[in-house]
Image 1 (cartoon, rainbow, N blue to C red):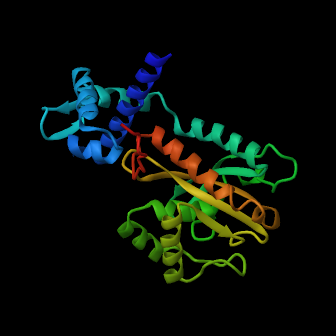
Image 2 (cartoon, rainbow, N blue to C red):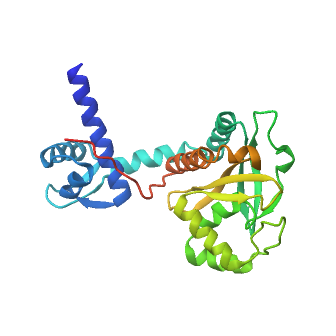
Image 3 (cartoon, one colour):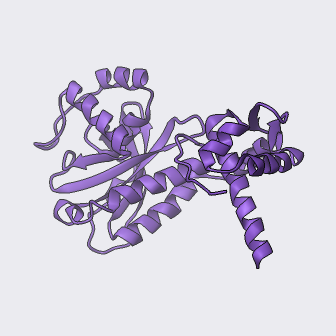
Length: 263
């Protein structure tokens, strides 16, 4: 048992090093040790094994980067992964867990189009009629999540073209206010539709990104405002977590908070 525990610990540290290299691209062995809270001797030992297996490129002195074998494994995983099928399964789990409707939409020009939904409850909002329906980006959590994930110069140009038609009294119709809302979305990691598209409906959304960090679609959970207010501590967190999990499967690395793994 002690030997298995030791091997499991070594394996965990090895994966942590690979994940750090995926996020940082290139980093020194000393920096790896410091970032992960490992001793330098343990770091060198694990790097040596990873180098022998082709998972890292390292000459034993300075910079360390991912090796070709790690790249090959990543590409094999991506080729076997369908983001829309994966999202559908996650939407079903979200709807079941949160007892609300879960939706997915893709961008088409300056609008979002609903392409998938799951509603395993019998008391949520009606979503079946939404499939294929277009909605404005500025008034939905799906649209705002997608906008917030775009590069700043691209989203600025897009906002200038958007038709900020009001749908409810809370719809954002001012471009400066929309930009501020997107800044807040980026900071907290999820978007909010505060009854801006339909009265008395509250939605939380998050973007799904590809390996370049670009959004390819967005997911959301929606429900009656009064009921959703009682779940606002859990719904946005779970939507963000699911979107990130799918994005990771697509090769997105992004900022990662690496825990101290001990020595």
